[in-house]
Image 1 (spheres, rainbow, N blue to C red):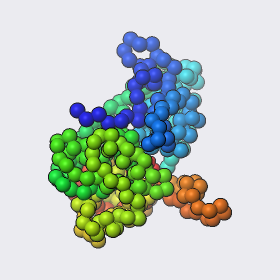
Image 2: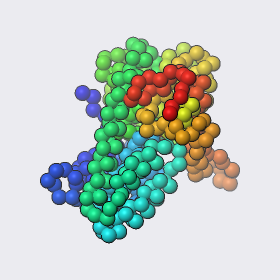
Image 3: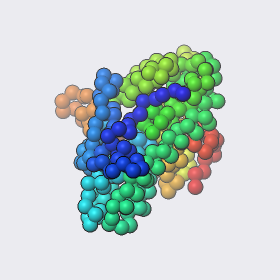
Image 4: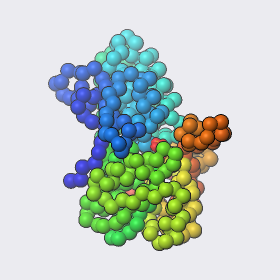
Length: 341
Ligand code: MRU
């Protein structure tokens, strides 16, 4: 069985504190600090909501499903430090703070809503229910990754060049990832192919994270700068594109890391199939189209322009459904026209 890196680990965190018969440990969320990769693999132990919110904002933990899991487990960890009588009020405040950490990935709000439905009483059992729900969300995420992998893997044929953008892999989910999961499954089945990992400016999740995790798994990976994609497609190196998503509207329009929309336009020009892989927890059927998806605008400093130069730094874009060949969820491969209820 192929082992991927896990953004969350079991020792010393909220998971360890809740095993049957083991007394509850002081709640902690233990995560890889993804801002330090690939130079260093270091873990953070967080037990305070301000620290968890800051970790999500600076992308120490990132990727739509991982943000949802981190918020749920973070809320559970923080709730273990609350006095019984203040549980309902304070846990709601913590959830509100977590919900304000990042706006685009709907998994964050989906996960918190699930947890909040358990907040009905001010007692220890309710705090324990939050832990159980956080763990259930993480466990479902693991199953979801496996299912997306098996639905998507048949798209990857021997010898193909497969392009991906940003990081929708193990670091971004509870397990194999979304866009990268079909690659892990195809690799485990013995197929040889090359993954082209877009650098993904300005924070380089592709070159720092995707290339790092695929290389560790023994998958052939080549990093290219974002502005090389058109040339690489023209040279005939790309047969398939698979990306993740942060929020998918009811009509199939899909928000993902800035630069994804441009790739989809290029793919159409070059006749390359373009797929989005995401769990159903990323589908926001309350939004009719992608125009309604909130786009996070990040710190201009990330772009690295000269002092005083005005910078516009949207972190995501929306790919219109007509450019998407298929959407792979844990339920299967959906073909257009999309209609998510
Ligand atoms: O800003 P990030 O790094 O959180 O953006 C992540 C992405 O855009 C991913 O492609 C998306 O969240 C899917 S992760 C399975």
